[in-house]
Structures are given as structure tokens and as C-alpha cells.
Length: 230
Image 1 (tube, rainbow, N blue to C red):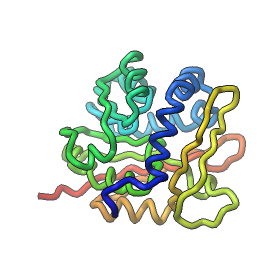
Image 2: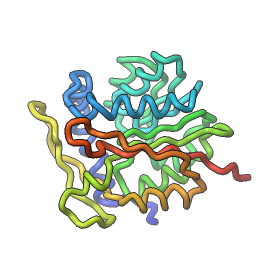
Image 3: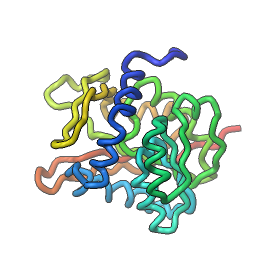
């Protein structure tokens, strides 16, 4: 693993900086059908199934999940690498928000002991995801859990080979000014499992929220706990 971000990793950050404003608008107006109908509630349910008092929302964006959890009595800290998204999150409220990159988290920039760390559609890269997953165990309280929601690879892979690697991005949100879609790193289910297990996690639950119209999975959610290491 290189210490320097790859061109696709840089492109992800550049794209999100460019599209922070239309993204915030899209979330506020509930423009993304799969989130509105399925995946937003699915991640809230998964987090609340752990009955957390404290949550770290990694890649929190404009903070919608933090606000949803705060309404349920949870204390949330949200972090994101994009200052414009953190500015929106602070303006909208619901938690404490900090601009912190995944590289900074991997380097120890955060000190936390939370009941749940959650990454909701926020692990798009290759090296950045590996570094982040490796760092999360140190941020969890005893019996804490790491919860990831991501695109279901069986559905999101489309007609391309079911093989790990970078894919071109695309914005599937109409009538807003999105540009420069970010690439994303495709991982088959086996790769997600291997990634978590290799960093000391035990997957205690895997959920596959179904789209009620297509009856195909809209996402996959991993709930994992970490071994306590000296």
C-alpha cells in the first residue's frame, strides 16, 4: 500500500468538493429514490439495533444521518474530508462536526471510544478504505460495532465482470448541477469480508435491504465487532 493517494483517490475528493452544494440540495429535497425509500431507514435501523449512546459518523457529508440519530437521543460526532459539507452539517446541526480526512484518521487524528462507528455509502476508494478500516478498531468502545452500508456488488456491478477494481462514476440524480462524477472501487462480497476480517473484525450480521419494486437488494450492510488488541 502506498503512502501517497492514487489519481482515482484524488479524483474522489475533487469531485465531492465540486459537488458539495448540489449534493446538499439533493439530500435536503430527498432526490435520491433509493435513499428515500430504502437505504436511509435501513442504516438508521442498523445503527439503532446496537442501542448506542455515542456514534461516530465517518464520511458524514452534510450530516443527515447524524440528525436522524440525534432525534433518537444519540450523541453523534460527524467527520468528513470536505470542508463545504462540514460547513453545511454545522449549519443544519444535530451533532459535532469536524473536517478530518481518512488519511488523518489513519494517522491518529481522532481520539474516540464510541458505541458505533458508521460509514454510510462513504467508502468509495481503495487505499483510503483500507487505511480507514484498519484505524476504526481504536475508535470503538468495548463491545462497539463498525457498521458499513455500501452498494450491493451483485447489483451495482451491472454487466461488468464481478472482479475487484476501479469503476467509472456516474451521477444518477436528475435536474441538479452535478459534474465530474467520481470513480469508485468495486469490491465483491468476498473482498468486503476479507477486508474486515484481515483488520480484526468479526462480522456479526449482514443485511441486504430490498427494493420493494424490483425485489433486488438496494445495498448491503455489514455489522462488525473488533477484537480488543493490546
